[in-house]
Amino acid sequence: MTSRGIADKVAIVGMGCTQFGELWDRSTDDLLVDAVGQAVTSAGVGVDDVDAFWLGTLGSGQSGLALSRPLGIDYKPVTRVENYCATGSEAFRNACYAVASGAYDRCATR
Amino acid sequence: MVASILAYASYVPAHRLGPDSGVRGNRAVASFDENSTTMAVAAARALPADQLDRVGSVWFATTSPAYLDKTNASAIHAALQLDPRVFASDLIGSGRSTVGSLHAASAHGGLVLAADVRVGKPGSSDEKLGGDGAAALLLGEGPGIAEILATASATDELLDRWRVPTSLTGEQWEERFGFERYVELVRATVDRVLEQSGVDAVDHVVLASSNSAVVKRAGTLVKGQVSTTTSPLGFSGAADVLVALADVLDRAEPGQTVLVVSAVDGSDVWLLRTTDLLASRRQPVPLVDQLAGGTPVPYPTYLSWRGLLAREMPRRPEPDRPAGPPSLRGVGWKFGFAGARCTECGFVHLPPVPVCRSCGATQQMESVPVSRLRGRVATYTVDRLAYSPSPPVVDVVVDFDGGGRCAVEVADADPATVEVGTEVEMTFRSLFVAGGVHNYFWKAKVLPAAASDEGSES
Image (cartoon, rainbow over all chains, first blue to last red; front, side, top):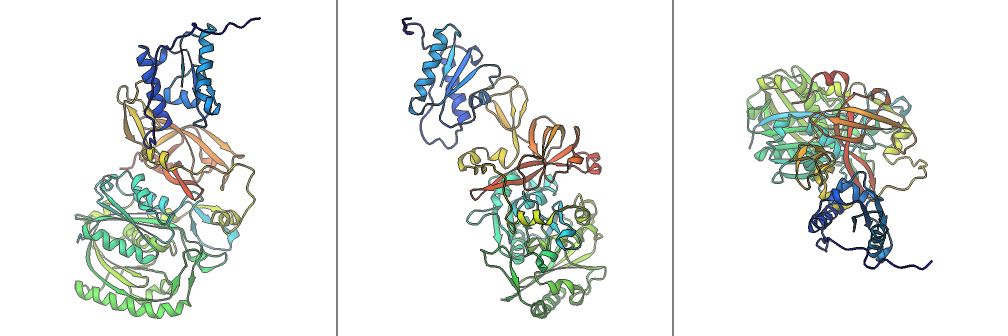
């Protein structure tokens, strides 16, 4: 079977980014809430409109709870991705496949 | 100089040495999750809450500090959720440090706290005659429960009791040597105080000393018309003089004189007179009741708590030590047990979270103090497999009066006393020490059946 790739099947419709630095007074919870908030706001939707999440992190928190607990997103799937320096792009790549496959309409990745 | 004592309280830990230790009587010992800091917090929390709000400074005396190079009183300050402008400092070393705290607090008013964990070598007199505990004394402008009439002091360089900082247990010279010296010092300072104040005979004498012969023969030094007493807790180091005073304030009548003598590296004497307010401002539970009863701890367990016996540890990973930055970010929760209430819908979160569990509002939270609230057990687990220096581990989910629910461990747990609906209050403890860092947090403590009938503490 010939693979066709997922070009032109997925669009980035929102984005958020926090400050970088030694942020002593901000926890992972604060940073996640901030970044997700910015992303959904820029897309003109709410956190409730996101169907599934991919969290990329190396060692923060425990499993997908690191995202679902601070955001309070019960009943939404969260996939935790850990791949050293490729963590970010790996989380993004898998979220794209989820949309491209038609399984979900909107995915958030961070 | 402020001249009034506004409030007092004592704290005795729940455990006792049992018959298998060879020590008779009711020798109180701090639990594995207690230290001088946590016991000082417990004593302070027994003071009326409205008085604590007016504290201008905190002076913490101990001979068994949890930390050096780092202030311990700041953790007490955080646990009591005092205003940042309130000064808090330690006075470390001996029973005389407490006298120093009293001098410091009487300058402009303040809270004096003293607490100790007293360790003696197995079979020693320090093990037998010592006691772990804490006491609090609030000084300020009146009206109070007692007025300070006069004070006198003598300082003496005496090798009677000592301990090098690296040693867990201390030493004493022959008790008769110190006794003979203290007799002279005590009589001289007492005479000066009586002369200053014009009082001939006093009603109560409270004598505290690091010398065991002085304590045994207290009646031969100074006598009170109504009572001559020493601390019922045994020698509790820095806490000794305040514990002994608390015992007398539990039972003194208004208008009586109390002569407080601290014979430690000299002699320090205060003459007090109780007021009419004392009758209505006794501490909630008298010291003798705090001391009565208690739970015996098996002797090998006690020795391992103090590091005197190395026991086989279970095959479990060591706990991580608390990290500085998250401890600071979460200081209100970790040290103060303050939750977060959503300002949109009022839902109380324990621990604080950024997004409301109930209505989803983001970062719309205000801090809400919970440490003084009582709660009821919603459900519980008795865990006999989890590692604990004092098994079994009892975990409870607590519903607090006024809102909020969280899961915590039970302190000084007796599984027979924990049921759904059991009433609990919170207590400040050191969960464990990992990597040289004390992991402070709160546990639930089962209220005795009588206390839970009385409703919330004032």
